[in-house]
Amino acid sequence: MKKKLLMTAALALVCSVMVQAQIFTIGPKAGISSTRVNLKDHAERFDEGDAAYSYHVGAFARINILGFYVQPEAYFNSVKGEYISRNTIGDDETFEINKNKIDVPILFGYKIGPLRLNLGPVASFNLDAEIDKDAPIDEYKNAVFAYQAGLGLDISKLTVDLRYEGNFSNQATLGNNEGEVRINQVMLSLGLKLL
Image 1 (spheres, rainbow, N blue to C red):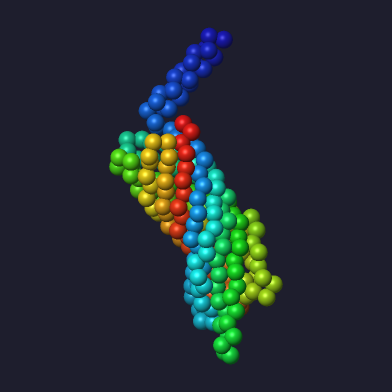
Image 2: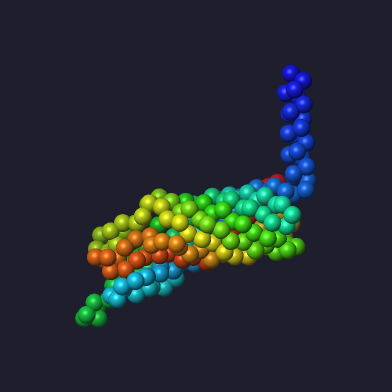
């Protein structure tokens, strides 16, 4: 019994010191993003459309060690975008992409005062994707790996992040293997430190 009590007290002390030293931070985050469909390889009869705006909402944690930090996150990301199919008679057709996914980035960064620099991989899991029945895309991959890089700013309990997200691999294929679809985002988010 004494051993359990001593262990509980030691754990409480360590947690208290971590919170006081701001070694560990956790909280909710939400934001908006500008999404652009990027077409790669042999996409001669397709063009990239305009950027579209969407949102994301989730949570983050941050572990600070001597100016460096690791920041795992998980959030729901609603993605929209468009691309254009061209044909020989000049009758172009615009197709929209509407995707819902779960993103799980693990960012590694360095903190200089209130400013943070970060970079890391993202695992992206497709929840669903609306596809026009006449669209050249048949289906999206269930999961892809991406990367994020950006800047952050901490102001008291608030944390602001501006990041770019790109993809390591294609998310779908156009037509009869006529090109690859990748979705790139610029993301702006606001978080609240609860600890």
